[in-house]
Length: 450
Image 1 (cartoon, rainbow, N blue to C red):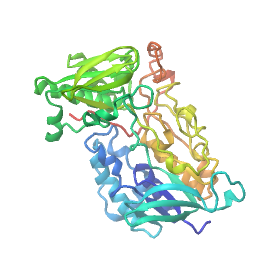
Image 2: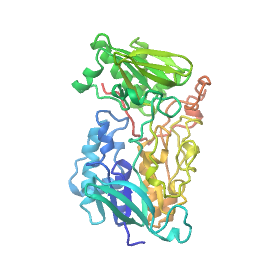
Image 3: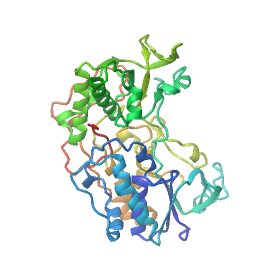
Image 4: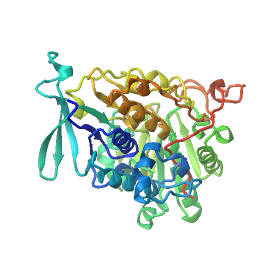
């Protein structure tokens, strides 16, 4: 088993950081990336600016790998876009890792199944002592790779939640795909901009992505007559959808929420609360009508931007023994720490290999994938996760258990998953849920594009 490689699924921020930690420990490692480049998922939202500064977006082990290559450290105080992050850090890191003796990075290699050698899900005998087997779809066909351990850092970008308010696509949603996008559009691109200019655009969702869309669309409405925006919020109030503002310890994240609030207050955005989409109807002229379960209607819709979060794709793990929370689809031990039904604070208690490991010994979920359906994943979380997990794979129990994680408060208190209960006032202590302020901060997120 020790002669076999560690296999990391995904060449994104968490996956490459895992490979960097493995390389520093001398562990043979193979990184499998479904896309054709490092950070393929990040590149798809490349026009969006991150909350974090460059100084907060480079994993310490990755920096050690990059240092001998002559890599030029970006301006520490700058806020990169996703494209900047992918081209200025992730791709150079992948290239540097691939040039080492310990790590191989493979592209166009999509994992379609993970199992134990000679065993299906139901077989107990000898399970923990057998290596993992991964079936990988490549340009030449399906390959079979064997591994000592597997770290799944494949993320959730490929699994956007639907418009439908019940977790399933709304009736008629599939038939309206030509007018629906499940990403924040790049309104700096003239072709994409023309698609939305002068149109009635619906934005569904209440997170940072919706805030980005609202800010950009409100600006477009000032320049393109006839552009109007309807914002569908599933909660009974939009009060908590703008984040913590000045109370947010990540300045750019707070500024985004403030900009979104100003966009709504400018009159460019019409807010419909308690709107859980039940049905989408395509009219004779091709425009859409959206209906809510409570009878609300939005008619004459030209375009819909659905930014209602993401969910993990677990289909390739059908033969792996998992212990996931039934609500979040996150590791059961981690779920209580990140459950949006309980809190929306930035604070997440320290966690690592112990919480991320599964009944399938040697298999770990990390990064966005580890959060399941929970929102607001932070980059520092992923970097600390993989440091602990790789230490566990290497047999360094002391390092694996030494997990330290302090995250920024969002400035928002109360559960963000509340159904029909009113918003709760902010804690009188002035901090998120009364927790003390933290200092060393880092996040993956978005900031206004303007």
